[in-house]
Figure (tube, rainbow, N blue to C red):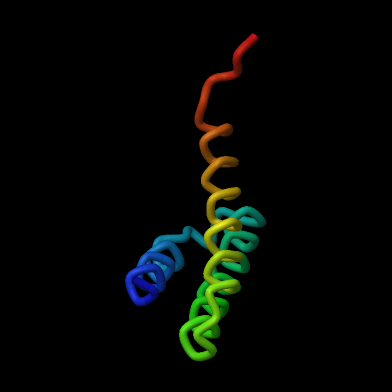
Length: 73
């Protein structure tokens, strides 16, 4: 499962439009951080690092969901 998660992050990195500016730069930093934490988790057999990545990516998913959803007035 860690390899699959790493592959997903690799795809996210590969599809970033780095010409998009600061948002792309920040996303790249988040994705690279997550990838490194997953690698460390596999090497150290540390589920805490996996949980950290899962929480971070869940927050990112929630933020994208809020941006995508129309504002409720």
